Structure formats: C-alpha cells, structure tokens
Image 1 (cartoon, helix red, strand yellow):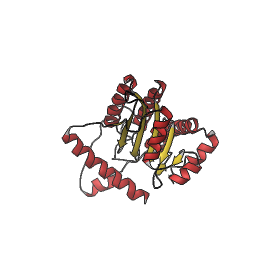
Image 2 (cartoon, one colour; image 1 turned 60 degrees about the vertical axis):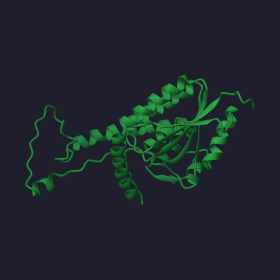
Image 3 (spheres, helix red, strand yellow; image 1 turned 180 degrees about the vertical axis):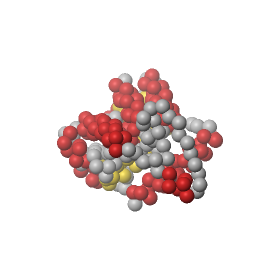
Image 4 (cartoon, one colour; image 1 turned 30 degrees about the horizontal axis):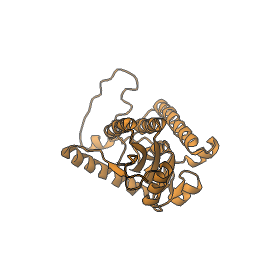
Length: 252
C-alpha cells in the first residue's frame, strides 16, 4: 500500500445519556465528516443507556445521512440500550465485546407524584392553566384516566416507530421484532443469536474489519472527540453519573 494513500477511518465515541445538547454536537461533527473526502469510514462506539427518544432518532438520521454520502459506518456497542440501540440501528455492521449490554427496546415515562409529601411538609401550591390537560405532567397530582389513555397512545406511536427502525435495520420481520421489544436487556451472545448485532469481538477486530473493507491502512485511524468547556464537562459528568447510577441500580 502506498505511503501516500490518504484514505482514513475515524473513530467517534458517544458516551452517556442521550440529550439535546449532546446530540447537537454529534450531528455537527457528522455533517463535517460528510464533506471530508479523506474519511472513508467511521467506527461509532456507543456507551449509552439511552435517553431522549426524539434526540435518539435525530442522531439515527444523522448517521443514515452520513452513510448516504458514501461513508461506511460500523458500530462497536459497549452499552447500547433503549435510545442507544436506536442509534446503533443506523450503523451498517454491529460488534460488541462479550460483556456488553444490548437492547432495552421499548418506551418508558416516569412522573413522581409528590402531592402527599408536600402536604405533610405544609407546602402549598397553586396552578393557573389554560388548557384542560396543561398540568398533566406536573408532580402535584396523578394522571386522570383520560390522560393515561392519551399517554398510552403517544407511547404506542413512539414504541412502534422504534420497532420499525429495528426491524428494517436488522432485517428481522416485524412480528419477531415485537417479540424482542419487551424492554429486556440482552448479553452480547444473546443479542447476536437474536440478530440484534452481527458479531461478538474485541474492538481491534471490529476496527480491522472496517479498515479491510475500505482498503485503509489500520495505522491511518484518527480519533475524533467532542470537546466541551470545562464547567460544562464537570456538570454533565455529574448528571451522567447520577443517571447511570440510578439506571444500573434498577437493572441489577
């Protein structure tokens, strides 16, 4: 291979919960990659328990656009659950280490109701609203039956969209995908058996496969990182650690 070969592969890592701010930075990076002629492929490493459904889908579409521009994009999944797995569905080929956690295909909404606690503490509150259900998301009361029905309908739409994405991306028929979309987490071996990933391997093997498929020298790999201001990094790390601690406590 010529030493003047300028073909490159980039490695991008998404770590943490999926939020509007984080996703915005990655979408900007992916748009830049679309125009970089020397970058022929991307290894997208995912280490995320999920997060915002809408922003997961936005990043999913951004990766799809990158592929349409002729870039080959593989994925290496360390933790790829819920929205993290939705993003993975935009990738051409999926690898994971033996102890990875994959799946959690489903939708969840949580609202704490603190009315009783506030009353015990002697905390009063007042709600002024225009619109019958404008306060349905507040923690001051439970949902009404009508509101629960509305939320279930909304969740159904998001859920079935998620199922469609998985079915199309992984080549699994819709009925079989529904049987996997229980919110359950799978080991790498189980995920491979269910066709949710392609191969259980170490990172080097996955990267070598991508480079070989593009005729790129494995030494011509660059790591691209999203840089944030120091204060923002401290705050985001604290929030991320808190969210992930709750997530893993619930999981185990």
